[in-house]
Image 1 (cartoon, helix red, strand yellow):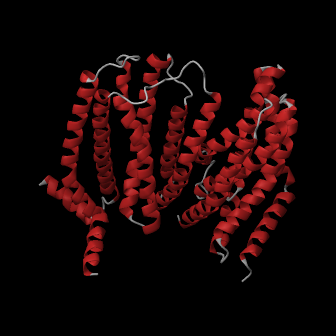
Image 2 (tube, helix red, strand yellow):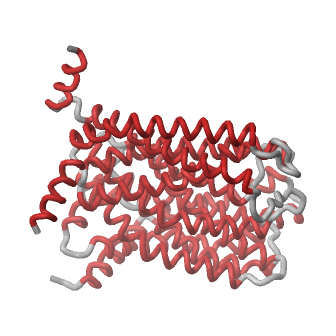
Length: 226
Length: 253
């Protein structure tokens, strides 16, 4: 039997390849992210001082919604075509496969959103001093969103229909990430120190890394059995 | 070994739905009497005889409902999560019935805590809703409860629903302290200058004693209603079992 590392690598490669073959679909969360950014000044007015005040929170909320929308595909398709059962039955540790899936999801949604965020923050008149904290925070925070989103996705995988339930389960868990992420940007933009908030954000992401793969794996087994 | 064998046997009998149903039937009248008596004592003492607060006058008296409800709202989440863990690990059916009884009860207590807090906010802060750290944490807690309840309803199979809810409740348990700490931190960042309830560092004993009575009364009340809910859940799930039918026939004749 190939080692657990091989299973991780194989699933990661497969997921990235699948994402690459439908680049258009993968770009949708990014387009959503950009569109909402354009709607904000239309809704609240174009004054730069007001936009700058709203920018840290708005960019974070949009990143949150973008990753949340994308998380729908985490396990759903594999469940529908039966591939998920093979993942659960395979001798590879399921949590490691879940982690591979989450990392692939993060590379395909979280990282592009993070890379796009300085541009959109600039459109919202966020002062340049806030940009490093925004990019660092989103890089960590979107990974935490993907990890927690995997738990929600795994819990609802066997439930048919358009799943409004998944965001409902996951959003309360996003609260700490949102708080520390926006605080880091707001402090840096005001010329203050953001390292403390970023360190706490990193701690939360590390904890999510520790807990979520196991919880999501347990939830997938429940869903497959049911 | 023989002793411990007998212990496990007895535990097994209690943890079986009919065993628990019979046993808890004996507890219910005592719990009901004790919680009602303490509730009456605490309410009369707190609302009529405790001295009015120097700053807030009589409006502070809502703490006699607000504080115990908040305590149990949080404790109820842990009751739910521990029951879920027992169900998940040892497949004890009774634990799942307890868990499904605990979710709506906890959500109701959380709502009561939020509602009484907002009523209290009007005379003290001049507004019904303030983004205060504790209020915000309670709101997130309410969402966590609602998530567990919604997940249970979404599954057609009770067995699957119970295990999925247990996983969610356990993830929520890890998160609750982090949510509380982060909301505290968020509040100290954004703390509005004007409205701050500068509560005295320690309550006057004359105010504190009725509060203590109310807290104990709420714990008993919680146990009482939780057991009643669990008994209803047991009957509903085992309605086709022979022992429930016998029970129903006993009642008729």
